[in-house]
Amino acid sequence: MRPAIICVDDDPMVLASLGEQLSRRLGQDYDIESALSATEALELLFVLHEEGVEIPVIISDQRMTGISGDELLTQVHLQYPKILSILLTGQSSLEEIAVAVNCANLYRYIAKPWNEADLLLTVMEALKYYFQEEEMIAQREALCKANQRLEKSLSLLQATLESTADGILVVDNTGHVTHCNQKLIEIWDLEANLNPITQDNRILEAILDQLQEPALLLNSMGQASQPTISSQSDILTLKNGKVIECYSQA
Image (cartoon, rainbow, N blue to C red; front, top):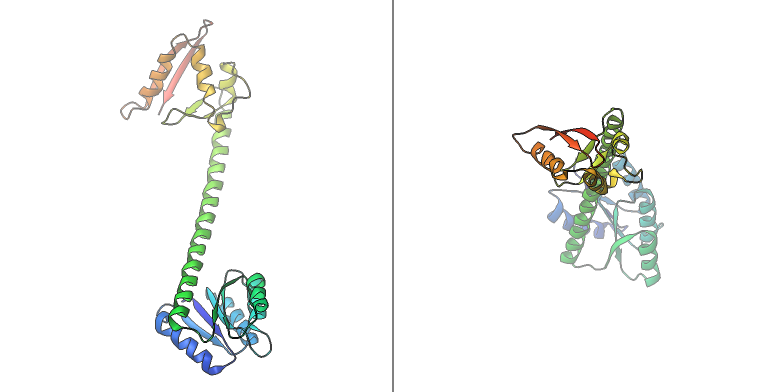
């Protein structure tokens, strides 16, 4: 289903000219819809929206019988805030334009009679801006969902780490601590305020500081990360004489 551009003007000849100019340049990709009044435009918007038609841009004349262009675009913005509004102005006052800019979130206004090249350039820029915004929204939503999945995975990982009787320390490929469980803190008598979730490398530093041969642990971690070696087992001796079995796995 192709997106639609809506044109509104109570002068049939002006409306036909506007539609023809847009159709010549954009008709292959967009349906150019027309309305002879603000009321007709609102009805058309409702129908197209119910049908699932995407409407990136509405172009309206300012001086129309009944509801004016700025009033129409204000209503459009309230009901369909994603739609970009372009106002065609003849002898409109600065106050009327200011109302449209502030209340209707006006994208641009174009003086009448308009230059066809300027009109098409403005509409094409509006379309580009609209779809860039849509893409950014989609990317933000995808990122938010990815972050939610990551948070669930981290919560599951932490729960798994806490359920074991072994002390576990997780280090990434750059040597930064990413996780550890409470049992590890107890075994190594570490400070409870050391936070592995923020990649607090003081945990690793505190462990190395207790060892008689800290290079043995570092070597074990390095060996376990090699492509041909999936695990490494060592006996670590602490400065206080305590012995701990260490098992490293990539």
